[in-house]
Each structure stands twice: as structure tokens, then as C-alpha cells.
Image (cartoon, rainbow, N blue to C red; front, side, top):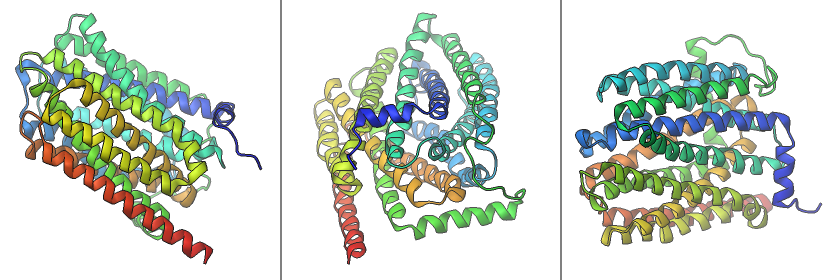
Length: 433
């Protein structure tokens, strides 16, 4: 059978009405996430009167990511039992409702635990939605088109977050800035979540699975399901191995996130230049999004030609040598262009590995366990990301010139690439032997 060309595969995926609706739900929701994140960044991390220290930088990300990471696997169990279409409709509406207290707290000028609590609730629901979107994808595309769907949907979502963040910064400035400007951006995010819910409601009730009807869960069944998901991941060796690459990749992306934040705030700008620093950070984020887009475009073709194992190794080495090489150069001689180029390289690596990881999990894990495995996957991603951010926040100087840390990240990616190639080769030898 002739290999399907990338353009043909993309057309085939987009021909599915259900895929387009699922895809549009993702874009609307993640665009709103970008607006939300830009409003919070301007309010907490890039406000001259609220300049955070390293502890607060780490605390902000920990509050946003870690608590849901702990409860995330339980969400996955429910994703395997509730109609995923209903989850997308109702969870997006809940997300919009929970944004209202965030708007009120920002209007009161309170950058404290109250704000952190409500933001945590919004993003917890958001992570639940993303796990549901990933678990739903095999119901709208299948076979060889699955890797194309994995390349297009999550990557477009990442780009939508970046676009939302950039437009959020521009919108805030357009309406006059300040806390009231952040409120306008948050209201726009709320509208985006409602739009995502309306789009999801156009899907058929059973269009996204799960495939099997199961009895109502008790807490014991939820706990048992969590254990079953972990065992499934442990026993499926290709899925387990790809998770190691994700852990390494998300850890170093956390280092990039915190390092870039410190570099633009304290090395490329002064404390008084908060708006300029925010603009620079938006450009760095855009660079990472462009890299992610390129990774999504190239990955389906390259994995068909050389296989997932080799491609994962190549992109990891690329991220170590090029991405963190440029980040190290920025630490030695601060330059916005060099920082953006490094972020683009690391974004390319990150999205390429994620597309491969999503595909391996969807191929290896039975559908009735896929939701809980993706929730575990999401937990691992978040914990690894926060670990990288926390290390950088505490170990890096305030200037972000964390030279030795960036060099260690380069080594970590290269070593992970060598390990993964070896594991893949041994599995292939065992299969042919």
C-alpha cells in the first residue's frame, strides 16, 4: 500500500465532522486558557508593585499545577465511565462559572491565596478537559491517521494558548492596562469557555465513548481503577518507555519556562520595565509555539519514514544541543533573539515527543483504561514541569543566568535519547527474534 502523504492524511482527518467539532472545542477552550494565563501573568508575575521572588515564582506554578496532579488519576477513572461528550460540555461551562470569582478577586487587587485557590479550580477543570480530549481522539480518527490527529490537535491547542496569551497582552494594553485591563481579558476567557461548551454540544451523545457501559463508581472502585491504570502502564513496555522521555522533556521545559521568565525580567529588562519584560516573554512563548507547530508538521512524516524510536532520539538530541546550547549562550550574553531561538528549538522537541507519546499510548492502552492512563500521563507531565521550574527558581540567580543548569539539561536530553534508542532496538530485536 502506498504511503499516505502528509497533506492527504491531513485532509482525511479534517474530513471527519466529529474530528472538526472536537478540534474546535479544543481550540476555543485553549484560546481561553491563553487569555487567562496572560491576565494572571500581568497581574502576578509582571506587575511592578508585585515583583515576585524565586519562592513566589515556584509557588505560583506549584499552586496552578501540583494539586490537580495529585487528584488527576481519579479524573481519568471517571473519563472511562462518563460520556466524554457530556464531560466536555459541562466541564467547559463549569470552567466559565469558576472564572467569575477570579475576575472579582483581580478587581479587588488581591494577589494572595484566595486568587490562587480560584485559579486552581479553573485550571483543574481545564486539565480534566484536556485529558478527556486526548482520550476521545481515537473515536474520531483511527489507524494511520491517528498520528496525524495527534500532531494536529494538541499542537494547534498549544498554538491557541500562545495566540490567546499574545492577544490577551495586547487587549489589556488596548483597554488601558492595570487590574481593570486584566479583568477584561478574563471576561474574554470566560466567553471562550462558553463557546467551547456550545461546540462540544453539537457532538452526538455517545460519539466520544467510552466504549463499555460500567456500573456507578464507589471510592473503592475509583482507587482500584487507579491501580489498574498504573499496572497497565507498567505492563505495556513501549508506553512505559515513552513516559521516561516525557519526564525528561517536561522537566527541561520547566527549566526553560522559569529561566526565560527570570532572564526577560532581570537580565533583558529592569524591574521598572514590567510591560517590556511581559512583551519579551510573550515573544519567547510565541517562539516555543512556533517550534511546537513545526514539530507537529514534521513528526508524522518522519515517524513513518524512520520510526518513532529514532525520531524521538533525534529530536531529544536536537533539543539538548541546539535548544539548551542557545539558552546557555543567552545566559552568558543576554540576547532576546538567542532566547527566542532556543525556545523554538525546545518547543520543537517537546511537541515532537508528545505527538509520539500520545500515539504510543493510544495504540498500546485498551480504550476502557485509556482515560485513567492519560490522567496519569497528565500528572507526570505536571509534576515534571513543576520540578524543573522549582529547581530553576531556587538554584538559578535572580538574573536567570543559570549556565550550569542549562548545560545539565542538555546532557539529560542526550542521555535520554541514547537510552530510548537502546530500549527500542532491544524490543525490535526481541520481536524479530
